[in-house]
Length: 246
Image 1 (tube, helix red, strand yellow):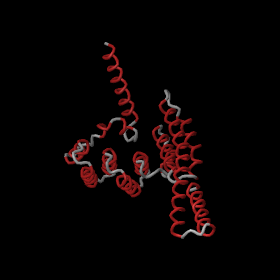
Image 2 (cartoon, helix red, strand yellow; image 1 turned 135 degrees about the vertical axis):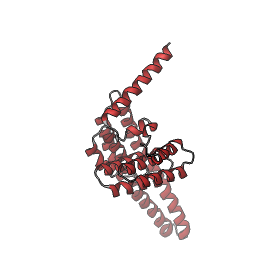
Image 3 (spheres, helix red, strand yellow; image 1 turned 30 degrees about the vertical axis):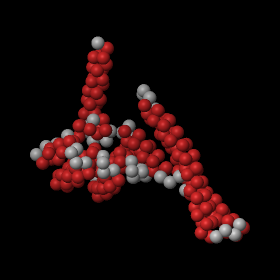
């Protein structure tokens, strides 16, 4: 918001000077004022976003460390919230990142308030919020949150499958099929969506594991199943390394 206010103040000042001091026509002064507003706003926005991206990149490096430095990453992102006063949507983007980190480390109680403030175009964070509503038995909120997510992120296959999965788990198999059909209209030919729709039509469980790690980050399977998946992934990597060495 500060970036807008500063830009607007500068534009108004220029407009007044041009009209009342330099005696230029009002429409010429208005055009120049708008140009000044745009230039200053772009400049300040770039400065702000550069600082925000530096914090996000630093947090990303902490998450990629072995072992991941979750708390340090969260602190860095929380410190970056100070820039939300300067730029629109920064707050939502940072809350999305913080909420996702808490959620992925299974700290769901701390994740929830941040996910509630998440940026609507971050489909993963919005989906995590929807899943959180499902676990809290707030079906209406789950549906409205998923609807918002697919409205802005209609090209995400996992999002459609996840929405259908949660509806199916809530006893809404018919609506789950309808959701997958809508997803196929957005993503015609998507094999995973087709497979999941066929599974529901045959009365079988959806094949969510086809999405790999992206699916497991939502913690909708038991901890034991997640650990087996991680062990299998590690075994596969070790086997590939052994093959390369030979």
